[in-house]
Image (tube, rainbow, N blue to C red):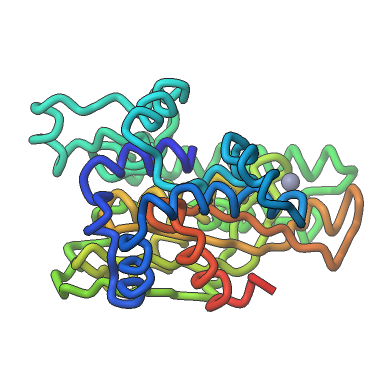
Length: 324
Ligand SMILES: [Zn+2]
Protein backbone atom coordinates (compact mmCIF):
# COMPACT_ATOMS: atom_id res chain seq x y z
CA UNK A 1 0.00 0.00 0.00
CA UNK A 2 2.65 2.42 1.06
CA UNK A 3 4.61 1.30 -1.88
CA UNK A 4 1.91 1.95 -4.45
CA UNK A 5 1.21 5.40 -3.19
CA UNK A 6 4.74 6.53 -3.27
CA UNK A 7 5.28 5.21 -6.74
CA UNK A 8 2.16 6.97 -7.96
CA UNK A 9 3.36 10.16 -6.32
CA UNK A 10 6.83 9.67 -7.65
CA UNK A 11 6.05 10.72 -11.20
CA UNK A 12 6.22 14.43 -10.54
CA UNK A 13 8.08 15.55 -7.41
CA UNK A 14 10.51 12.69 -7.33
CA UNK A 15 13.13 13.79 -9.76
CA UNK A 16 16.37 13.64 -7.82
CA UNK A 17 16.73 17.41 -7.77
CA UNK A 18 13.32 17.86 -6.17
CA UNK A 19 14.36 15.57 -3.36
CA UNK A 20 17.33 17.68 -2.35
CA UNK A 21 16.61 19.55 0.85
CA UNK A 22 18.90 21.85 2.73
CA UNK A 23 19.81 19.24 5.26
CA UNK A 24 20.39 16.58 2.70
CA UNK A 25 22.10 18.68 0.08
CA UNK A 26 25.62 17.79 1.05
CA UNK A 27 24.94 14.09 1.19
CA UNK A 28 23.17 14.23 -2.09
CA UNK A 29 25.99 16.03 -3.78
CA UNK A 30 28.36 13.42 -2.49
CA UNK A 31 26.22 10.76 -4.03
CA UNK A 32 25.93 12.51 -7.31
CA UNK A 33 29.66 12.90 -7.78
CA UNK A 34 30.32 9.22 -8.13
CA UNK A 35 26.89 8.02 -8.91
CA UNK A 36 27.91 5.16 -11.18
CA UNK A 37 30.30 3.79 -8.57
CA UNK A 38 27.69 4.27 -5.91
CA UNK A 39 25.18 2.13 -7.63
CA UNK A 40 27.46 -0.86 -7.31
CA UNK A 41 28.65 -0.11 -3.85
CA UNK A 42 25.11 0.46 -2.65
CA UNK A 43 24.12 -2.95 -3.81
CA UNK A 44 27.19 -4.40 -2.26
CA UNK A 45 26.49 -2.59 0.98
CA UNK A 46 22.92 -3.72 1.12
CA UNK A 47 23.70 -7.39 1.01
CA UNK A 48 26.42 -7.71 3.67
CA UNK A 49 23.98 -6.18 6.12
CA UNK A 50 22.23 -9.50 6.00
CA UNK A 51 25.20 -11.78 6.50
CA UNK A 52 27.70 -9.55 8.28
CA UNK A 53 31.13 -10.03 6.79
CA UNK A 54 31.99 -10.57 3.19
CA UNK A 55 35.06 -10.64 1.03
CA UNK A 56 35.66 -8.83 -2.22
CA UNK A 57 34.87 -12.00 -4.12
CA UNK A 58 31.53 -12.43 -2.42
CA UNK A 59 30.68 -8.81 -2.93
CA UNK A 60 30.77 -9.23 -6.65
CA UNK A 61 28.19 -11.98 -6.66
CA UNK A 62 25.98 -10.21 -4.15
CA UNK A 63 25.23 -7.44 -6.62
CA UNK A 64 22.37 -9.48 -7.98
CA UNK A 65 20.92 -10.20 -4.54
CA UNK A 66 17.96 -8.12 -3.47
CA UNK A 67 18.49 -5.62 -0.67
CA UNK A 68 17.11 -6.67 2.69
CA UNK A 69 14.51 -3.94 2.55
CA UNK A 70 13.29 -2.94 -0.90
CA UNK A 71 13.13 0.66 0.28
CA UNK A 72 16.88 0.68 0.78
CA UNK A 73 17.68 -0.38 -2.74
CA UNK A 74 19.40 2.18 -4.96
CA UNK A 75 17.34 4.35 -7.28
CA UNK A 76 15.79 1.98 -9.79
CA UNK A 77 16.69 2.41 -13.44
CA UNK A 78 13.71 3.30 -15.64
CA UNK A 79 13.56 -0.24 -16.96
CA UNK A 80 13.57 -1.74 -13.50
CA UNK A 81 10.95 0.68 -12.31
CA UNK A 82 8.59 -0.25 -15.08
CA UNK A 83 8.87 -3.87 -14.14
CA UNK A 84 8.20 -3.07 -10.50
CA UNK A 85 5.05 -1.10 -11.11
CA UNK A 86 3.93 -3.66 -13.65
CA UNK A 87 4.20 -6.40 -11.05
CA UNK A 88 2.35 -4.45 -8.42
CA UNK A 89 -1.34 -5.31 -8.27
CA UNK A 90 -2.30 -1.71 -7.87
CA UNK A 91 -5.91 -0.89 -8.64
CA UNK A 92 -5.43 2.63 -7.29
CA UNK A 93 -2.47 3.28 -9.54
CA UNK A 94 -4.62 4.08 -12.56
CA UNK A 95 -3.16 7.12 -14.21
CA UNK A 96 -5.70 9.91 -14.03
CA UNK A 97 -7.00 11.03 -17.38
CA UNK A 98 -6.47 14.70 -18.26
CA UNK A 99 -10.10 15.25 -17.34
CA UNK A 100 -9.65 13.69 -13.96
CA UNK A 101 -6.50 15.71 -13.38
CA UNK A 102 -8.33 18.92 -14.12
CA UNK A 103 -11.01 17.88 -11.69
CA UNK A 104 -8.45 16.96 -9.06
CA UNK A 105 -9.25 19.87 -6.81
CA UNK A 106 -12.82 18.74 -6.45
CA UNK A 107 -12.65 15.04 -7.08
CA UNK A 108 -9.70 13.10 -5.83
CA UNK A 109 -8.52 10.04 -7.76
CA UNK A 110 -7.44 8.47 -4.50
CA UNK A 111 -9.75 6.38 -2.35
CA UNK A 112 -8.46 8.14 0.76
CA UNK A 113 -10.55 11.24 0.29
CA UNK A 114 -13.69 11.21 -1.79
CA UNK A 115 -15.08 14.18 -3.66
CA UNK A 116 -16.70 15.63 -0.56
CA UNK A 117 -13.54 15.30 1.43
CA UNK A 118 -15.01 12.41 3.38
CA UNK A 119 -12.53 9.70 3.95
CA UNK A 120 -13.42 6.13 3.25
CA UNK A 121 -17.16 6.69 3.55
CA UNK A 122 -19.09 3.46 3.99
CA UNK A 123 -22.78 2.65 3.74
CA UNK A 124 -24.43 4.97 6.23
CA UNK A 125 -21.69 7.57 6.54
CA UNK A 126 -23.43 10.02 4.28
CA UNK A 127 -26.79 9.21 5.83
CA UNK A 128 -25.46 10.11 9.26
CA UNK A 129 -23.82 13.26 7.97
CA UNK A 130 -26.87 14.59 6.20
CA UNK A 131 -29.67 13.62 8.56
CA UNK A 132 -32.07 16.17 10.06
CA UNK A 133 -33.11 16.47 13.70
CA UNK A 134 -36.01 14.05 13.41
CA UNK A 135 -33.76 11.43 11.86
CA UNK A 136 -31.23 12.03 14.63
CA UNK A 137 -33.88 11.20 17.20
CA UNK A 138 -34.74 7.99 15.40
CA UNK A 139 -31.06 7.03 15.29
CA UNK A 140 -30.63 7.68 18.99
CA UNK A 141 -33.76 5.72 19.88
CA UNK A 142 -32.54 2.72 17.91
CA UNK A 143 -29.16 2.88 19.62
CA UNK A 144 -30.78 3.14 23.05
CA UNK A 145 -32.87 0.06 22.29
CA UNK A 146 -29.75 -1.84 21.27
CA UNK A 147 -27.90 -0.90 24.44
CA UNK A 148 -30.89 -1.91 26.53
CA UNK A 149 -30.81 -5.29 24.82
CA UNK A 150 -27.11 -5.56 25.60
CA UNK A 151 -27.77 -4.83 29.26
CA UNK A 152 -30.46 -7.51 29.38
CA UNK A 153 -28.21 -10.00 27.65
CA UNK A 154 -25.36 -9.59 30.10
CA UNK A 155 -27.78 -10.42 32.90
CA UNK A 156 -28.51 -6.93 34.17
CA UNK A 157 -31.72 -5.14 34.95
CA UNK A 158 -31.92 -2.13 32.63
CA UNK A 159 -34.67 -0.66 34.81
CA UNK A 160 -32.68 -0.39 37.99
CA UNK A 161 -31.84 3.13 38.97
CA UNK A 162 -28.16 3.17 38.08
CA UNK A 163 -28.79 1.92 34.57
CA UNK A 164 -31.88 3.92 33.66
CA UNK A 165 -30.03 6.56 31.64
CA UNK A 166 -27.19 4.32 30.57
CA UNK A 167 -28.56 3.43 27.13
CA UNK A 168 -28.84 7.09 26.21
CA UNK A 169 -25.46 7.95 27.70
CA UNK A 170 -23.77 5.10 25.92
CA UNK A 171 -25.45 5.90 22.61
CA UNK A 172 -24.25 9.49 22.80
CA UNK A 173 -20.77 8.43 23.86
CA UNK A 174 -20.62 6.01 20.93
CA UNK A 175 -21.60 8.77 18.54
CA UNK A 176 -18.81 10.90 20.00
CA UNK A 177 -16.26 8.11 19.72
CA UNK A 178 -17.11 7.85 16.05
CA UNK A 179 -17.57 11.54 15.25
CA UNK A 180 -14.80 11.27 12.69
CA UNK A 181 -17.37 9.90 10.25
CA UNK A 182 -18.94 13.34 10.16
CA UNK A 183 -15.71 15.21 9.57
CA UNK A 184 -14.16 16.19 6.35
CA UNK A 185 -10.50 16.59 5.45
CA UNK A 186 -11.11 19.69 3.36
CA UNK A 187 -13.01 21.43 6.18
CA UNK A 188 -10.24 20.56 8.60
CA UNK A 189 -7.46 21.85 6.38
CA UNK A 190 -9.60 24.84 5.43
CA UNK A 191 -6.99 26.37 3.17
CA UNK A 192 -4.26 26.38 5.82
CA UNK A 193 -1.57 25.49 3.32
CA UNK A 194 1.14 28.12 2.97
CA UNK A 195 3.78 28.50 0.27
CA UNK A 196 6.74 29.08 2.54
CA UNK A 197 9.50 27.69 0.36
CA UNK A 198 10.38 25.52 3.34
CA UNK A 199 11.94 22.17 2.54
CA UNK A 200 13.11 20.87 5.90
CA UNK A 201 11.59 18.13 7.95
CA UNK A 202 8.59 19.09 10.09
CA UNK A 203 7.57 16.81 12.93
CA UNK A 204 4.67 16.89 15.35
CA UNK A 205 5.20 14.19 17.92
CA UNK A 206 3.32 12.70 20.86
CA UNK A 207 -0.12 13.44 19.46
CA UNK A 208 -2.57 11.74 21.80
CA UNK A 209 -4.90 9.48 19.90
CA UNK A 210 -8.01 7.67 21.08
CA UNK A 211 -9.65 5.25 18.73
CA UNK A 212 -11.97 2.24 18.72
CA UNK A 213 -10.89 -1.23 17.72
CA UNK A 214 -13.32 -2.32 15.06
CA UNK A 215 -13.00 -5.95 16.01
CA UNK A 216 -14.06 -5.59 19.65
CA UNK A 217 -15.57 -2.10 19.89
CA UNK A 218 -13.25 -1.26 22.75
CA UNK A 219 -10.77 1.61 22.76
CA UNK A 220 -7.15 1.68 21.89
CA UNK A 221 -5.11 4.75 22.63
CA UNK A 222 -1.60 5.94 22.32
CA UNK A 223 0.63 8.44 20.62
CA UNK A 224 1.10 9.31 17.03
CA UNK A 225 4.12 11.01 15.52
CA UNK A 226 3.75 12.73 12.16
CA UNK A 227 6.60 14.04 10.06
CA UNK A 228 6.76 15.41 6.58
CA UNK A 229 9.21 17.13 4.27
CA UNK A 230 7.47 19.94 2.45
CA UNK A 231 7.75 20.61 -1.23
CA UNK A 232 7.72 24.36 -0.50
CA UNK A 233 4.20 24.31 0.97
CA UNK A 234 3.66 23.78 4.69
CA UNK A 235 0.40 22.96 6.43
CA UNK A 236 -0.84 24.75 9.56
CA UNK A 237 0.79 22.74 12.32
CA UNK A 238 -2.43 22.24 14.30
CA UNK A 239 -3.99 20.56 11.28
CA UNK A 240 -1.88 17.44 11.69
CA UNK A 241 -3.37 16.44 15.07
CA UNK A 242 -6.80 17.27 13.73
CA UNK A 243 -6.34 14.99 10.75
CA UNK A 244 -5.15 12.27 13.14
CA UNK A 245 -8.22 12.88 15.30
CA UNK A 246 -10.59 12.67 12.36
CA UNK A 247 -9.35 9.23 11.37
CA UNK A 248 -9.02 8.02 14.95
CA UNK A 249 -12.65 8.83 15.74
CA UNK A 250 -13.89 5.98 13.64
CA UNK A 251 -13.87 2.25 13.94
CA UNK A 252 -10.29 1.41 13.17
CA UNK A 253 -7.43 -0.93 13.30
CA UNK A 254 -4.16 0.71 14.16
CA UNK A 255 -2.49 -0.32 10.92
CA UNK A 256 -5.14 1.36 8.80
CA UNK A 257 -5.32 4.43 10.99
CA UNK A 258 -1.60 4.99 10.54
CA UNK A 259 -1.85 4.55 6.80
CA UNK A 260 -4.89 6.75 6.35
CA UNK A 261 -3.33 9.67 8.19
CA UNK A 262 -0.19 9.42 6.05
CA UNK A 263 -2.14 9.12 2.82
CA UNK A 264 -4.44 12.02 3.64
CA UNK A 265 -1.51 14.34 4.37
CA UNK A 266 0.22 13.18 1.22
CA UNK A 267 -2.90 13.96 -0.73
CA UNK A 268 -3.86 17.36 0.62
CA UNK A 269 -0.34 18.77 0.94
CA UNK A 270 1.62 16.91 -1.75
CA UNK A 271 4.89 17.07 0.21
CA UNK A 272 8.11 15.28 -0.69
CA UNK A 273 7.27 12.64 1.84
CA UNK A 274 5.24 11.75 4.92
CA UNK A 275 6.05 9.46 7.82
CA UNK A 276 3.61 8.42 10.51
CA UNK A 277 4.43 6.24 13.49
CA UNK A 278 1.91 5.23 16.10
CA UNK A 279 2.45 3.41 19.38
CA UNK A 280 -0.60 2.36 21.29
CA UNK A 281 -2.13 0.08 23.82
CA UNK A 282 -5.20 -1.94 22.91
CA UNK A 283 -7.77 -2.58 25.58
CA UNK A 284 -8.93 -5.64 23.70
CA UNK A 285 -5.47 -7.05 24.33
CA UNK A 286 -4.96 -5.61 27.80
CA UNK A 287 -8.36 -6.41 29.33
CA UNK A 288 -9.09 -9.70 27.62
CA UNK A 289 -7.34 -12.33 25.57
CA UNK A 290 -3.62 -12.38 26.27
CA UNK A 291 -3.91 -9.68 29.01
CA UNK A 292 -0.51 -8.20 28.42
CA UNK A 293 -0.90 -4.90 30.18
CA UNK A 294 2.47 -3.44 29.30
CA UNK A 295 2.63 -4.34 25.65
CA UNK A 296 2.37 -1.65 23.06
CA UNK A 297 1.84 -1.94 19.35
CA UNK A 298 3.87 0.15 16.94
CA UNK A 299 2.84 0.76 13.37
CA UNK A 300 4.39 2.98 10.76
CA UNK A 301 3.68 4.24 7.29
CA UNK A 302 6.33 6.04 5.25
CA UNK A 303 5.65 7.62 1.90
CA UNK A 304 7.68 9.49 -0.69
CA UNK A 305 11.22 10.41 0.29
CA UNK A 306 10.84 8.71 3.69
CA UNK A 307 10.19 5.50 1.86
CA UNK A 308 13.04 5.90 -0.59
CA UNK A 309 15.78 7.33 1.63
CA UNK A 310 16.96 5.33 4.57
CA UNK A 311 18.79 8.35 5.97
CA UNK A 312 15.67 10.50 5.93
CA UNK A 313 13.70 7.75 7.57
CA UNK A 314 16.32 7.25 10.25
CA UNK A 315 16.51 10.97 10.92
CA UNK A 316 12.77 10.96 11.54
CA UNK A 317 12.89 7.87 13.73
CA UNK A 318 15.71 9.20 15.86
CA UNK A 319 13.99 12.60 16.26
CA UNK A 320 10.82 10.97 17.54
CA UNK A 321 12.87 8.63 19.71
CA UNK A 322 11.76 5.31 18.28
CA UNK A 323 15.05 4.33 16.63
CA UNK A 324 16.69 3.09 19.80
ZN1 LIG B 1 -9.64 -5.50 19.28
